[in-house]
Amino acid sequence: MKKKRYFSLEKKKSLTGIVFVSPWIIGFVSLLLSPLLQSIQFSMSELNVTDTGFTTIFIGLKNFRQSLAVDANFNRLLVNEIKNMLLNVPLITFFSLFAATLLSQEFKGRMLARAIFFLPVVLTSGVISYLDNGNYMLQLLGMAGSDAEANFSAFSSLDLEALLLQGGMPPSIVAYLTGAVDRIYQIVTSSGIQIIIFLAALQSISPSLYEAARIEGSTEYEMFWEITFPMISPYILINTIYTIIDSFYNNNVTSYIQDMAFNNFKFGVSSAMSWIYFLAIAVILIVVTGIISKRVFYQE
Image (tube, rainbow, N blue to C red):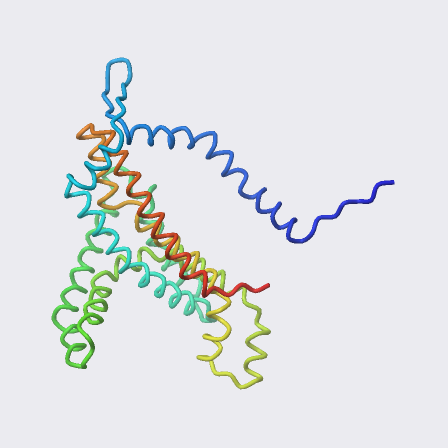
């Protein structure tokens, strides 16, 4: 009689992970792999549209040289978007954690407050933003957002910057803080998903940890840095990666690449720009993940 074969806990976890990602793997292989390989072919070819389809002539890395060494607009837009990402990601992450910490407390109207923070995500989603142009409410919301940014910008330039400089704060930090005030509307509208993830992380922490800490005489400040922050550190990594990807999702670079393909009909150059853009994002994600992962606490 053969003995039953039992899997170890680690192997069970691995198999469970494979089952969960298998729909994505099947969808990627069946739907995305072919266009991905074709885009690599386009990026190294001169593509000409004909009546019967298109023809490609292999030209090597010429399209990449065109994108990086000849087209000044692409380089400028790419550098600007990377700078904006480096400025916005820490602000969005910290604001999301701050808002989630407040919204996790017990108070009247907590569910309404959570809905209000998530409302900008719904209003700026693809479904809403691409509704018919007769949606005057959406246009008014966009105008309100622009007015809010203008008001905050005026506040920072007239009051906040002078106040901080007079207080002896270094100009570089003052410029960063005033820039954060200028972008407060963008930060709030980009934080809905991150707030929900942080809320889930905060609610997953066992109350017994806080009870034990209070018995030992810990303050709220100490409990946050010694219990809350380490326990939610994996979610900080998740939110940082999500925010980076979200910041690169729809911006001036993607618009420029689309314009190069569908208005100027330079499909080879646009494919090369897409791959350069992809590689830039990949390098940033690898570096950021490597830095943050070293400081992440995983509860075994």
